[in-house]
Image 1 (cartoon, helix red, strand yellow):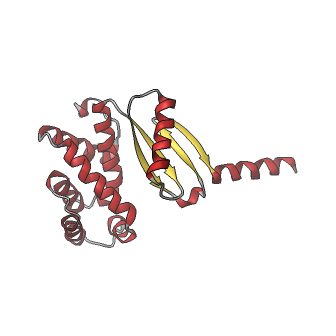
Image 2 (image 1 turned 90 degrees about the vertical axis):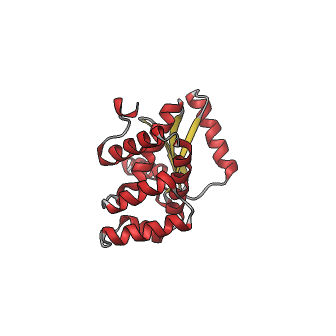
Image 3 (image 1 turned 180 degrees about the horizontal axis):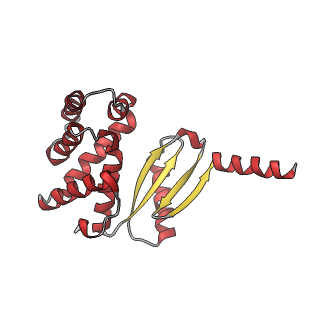
Length: 187
């Protein structure tokens, strides 16, 4: 089971493992994963929701009420909604992204999938995501690869790919920094 060999550690790992085990027992892993993915999409699209999740200014009660309203409006229910609400009431909402990532990693491991964390400067369309996925499948020689796409405008362009402990950094920011360092050495 998931607790035998933890993929992620710390508080977020404990929460993710607990959720995975509950979902496994309830035979609702796919439903929970779908709901968590929808909540992640909400986080990616709403700066106000990110502010609510990250800010220590809000009390646990305020966060819980607001999150419950967001979950109801997004039609996220069941175990995932209870989990997110519990996380909010325990004042751990700041780590929800890591918890979701940890849960997804446990699901992928159980399915024999490889997970790749892809960081891009702006949102990609489905065609570009499919191309990236095909490239990663060819690189890793795995049958199935799941992508965790993160948007970070600070990389300026290009992308970063992390697969396990491997990191491929083809971001414009890194390339510009390399050129700057090379020019300093020439002087």
